[in-house]
Amino acid sequence: MKKLNVALVGLSFGLEFVAIYCKHPDVDKVFVVDQNEKLLAIAKKRYSIPDDQCFTNFEDILGIPEIDAVHLVTPPATHAPFSVQVLNAGKHCGCTIPMGMSIEELEDVIRARKRSGKNYMFMETTIYQREFLYIKELYERGELGRLQYMTCAHYQDMEGWPDYWKGFPPLMHPTHAVGPCLMLAGHLPDKVYARGSGRVREELEKQYGCPFAFESAFISLKDSDITIEMERFLYGVARSYSECFRIYGENKSFEWQQLADEDPVLYTRTGALEKVDIITGENELSSRGGEIKEERIKIPDYAHLLPKEIASFTTNTVYNNENTHLSFTQGGGHGGSHPHLVHEFVRSILENRKPLIDDLMGAYWTGTGICAHKSAMNGGEVISIPAFENVK
Image (cartoon, rainbow, N blue to C red; front, side, top):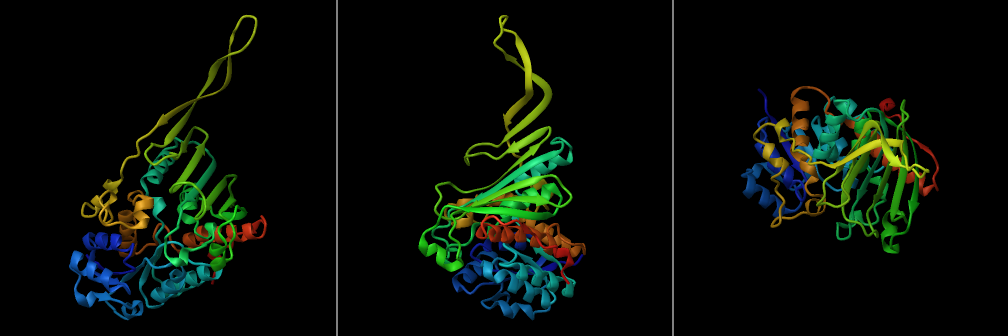
């Protein structure tokens, strides 16, 4: 069977993915690109990558015929332009979040994907984290019953991150929060209403013109009665890191743990009525309110869904106490999602099918945040999310 040759662009955080590609059974050659020659040297030494597969210039790899696919792990402002270049070069493209910085950029990527006939995969981690895979199983087995409401959040203090993050509008980077809810709901977002709250330091406001410390939104879905609540902050809020969601079903509900060392909670509505004391002359018991059972649950790992060669990467990562990266020290490795992302990207290409999260889904998820930020800046104006499937 054919194996893929893949180029990974951006090694600061991308080193994590280089390790997975190097061990994936369907990948032959791995090329790496970064302007930082020290990172290139680390990749060459650690993963035995030949000199002729290491580059400092992104454009240099676009003309290499044997490269089948490119995975972008670069700064946000480059995502859409680089994705368009990759697709225009006739190569499959996987890109980290966000997909783009404006509705126009999202549409540019969709057009490029359509022209190229190649795959575009939006590399959102949260739909492959253990918690989502667990709740997805419960939902597909019918244990949750009818979905009634969902909330999601991405809390992260980004002091000390690279300058391009300074003052980044909170909901312009929405998909770690909203991705799991939209995936589980199975309906496209339709309209969004958002508000900003609080203020960041004046120096943080300058780059993107966003004064808000916090942005929160309500999202309505097409052909659905479900509402999703979404919130996000990046600066000036005393709260530790979390990419979390809460799912409320008719029969069972899931709530993310409040502290990192806790387990999440599963609530079960039994159908019985609770017996409660009421004050009467005879001190009778009355049946009022549905009985709800609550339990802390252990989330299983999902390495069994992966080829054995890369299964260990759900728990063993490149980054650790000795070799740190902020995405790991704050984010805990994204819930074991990285090898699942790589595997889906590779297999979707080899199986000649669209990936689970393609350009249209990526545009809807990213576009929801872009529209939410616009709504917040306009004082809570209701914004319709574009119909990205109509882009020509």
